[in-house]
Amino acid sequence: MGRNLSFDEKETLAKVANIFREKGYEATTVKDLEKTTGLTSGSLYNSFGGKEALFDIAIGFYNNNVVRNRISTFLDQADDPLSGMKNLFHSLLNEPDGQENGCLLTNTAVEFNNRRRHTTQELDTGFSLLEAAFKRQIIRCVERGQIAKHPSPQQAATRLLIFYQGILVLVRAGLRRKEIEQIINDEIDLILGRRF
Amino acid sequence: MGRNLSFDEKETLAKVANIFREKGYEATTVKDLEKTTGLTSGSLYNSFGGKEALFDIAIGFYNNNVVRNRISTFLDQADDPLSGMKNLFHSLLNEPDGQENGCLLTNTAVEFNNRRRHTTQELDTGFSLLEAAFKRQIIRCVERGQIAKHPSPQQAATRLLIFYQGILVLVRAGLRRKEIEQIINDEIDLILGRRF
DNA sequence: TCTATTTTAAAACAAACAATCTAAAATTTT
DNA sequence: AAAATTTTAGATTGTTTGTTTTAAAATAGA
Image 1 (cartoon, protein in one colour):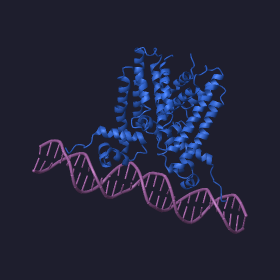
Image 2 (cartoon, chains in turn red, green, brown, cyan):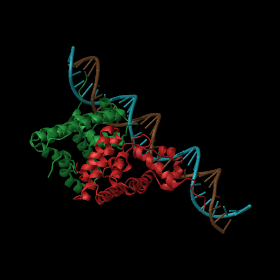
Image 3 (tube, rainbow over the protein chains, first blue to last red):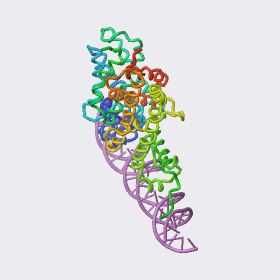
Image 4 (cartoon, chains in turn yellow, blue, red, orange):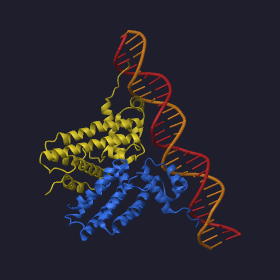
């Protein structure tokens, strides 16, 4: 058995997912991947296959790490479920690095329409992850008495998913941050059926 | 003064806008442009400049023709403003050609983040066109007594814009058409403040 | 009809692309 | 320490990319 990999696979995939998130699949070159990971194309191809395979792996990584982590932090672990929900949406507007790269799932869904069937499947997984978390959170809000019993938590969750994606489109374009900031609380209250 | 152009400029731009809408900027090659327009690269470069210039021109065309035309047909010319609004949203789910290409503005906003500043400007124009039309329509709904006087037509219009973009993301990925179909009427009623 | 000017088609261009190959370096196992 | 096996870096591959050039065809105006 020869030597081991000199790089941390998760760390590399995080970097890869991030550059794909920033530039999209087509605009990202293998040279870009070399630069951000610090590896050469030989290493990348040896470990992951080609650019396309790397992209698919990166999306899976994004689902199982980034998305799940955000759901866990903002929703499941939140003491106050309603505030947690709102915080999650507000966090879309203030990305840590100041860039406006949106979400890899959103960006990929738009870049490829229904051409690439297997990414579509990964995307559906990611969207379903979000939607299911929204639904859980709505039920928690009801249990805490923060909102009235909702006629259809499932439908409300899908609405939130659409709202979530819509925000990410405008964020990605760098448009209307201030307006969206003010809208989020109202819209969530509205979808969740709070009356004032 | 030599000969005139042998092709119709508007017709060509419509085809160009459509292929960019389908495949995105990066994935569209000059060969694709030649194929869909029936012109050679020489003609295209002579008339419009390069690929990038052609893209910018195509977005302008899309705003001033496709978007404005949809607003006019579904909203401004609708006898029943509330139904017109709902019809516009439902039309997103059933594109005539069966493909799911979404909207050129949405797709472009996501493909380029805030890298390309001049497309950002055209995008803002397009989004504002939609938002302003939504606002007009809300006011018309109030005048007709279809909804109660809205506390902030402007804010509601922005919400509709976000909802609109969110739908286009899911449509583009070919996901959840049936669910969205059922949600549209409720969500519009909700944003517009109809009580049941 | 003639001339000037433009469009057009096809070939040609350099640059950039994803992908592969090669030989050397590294390190695990024996 | 030796042998086996893998990673690695760098060079190189053949394609594809966007763009330009060329010469011929077309046509508007005089």
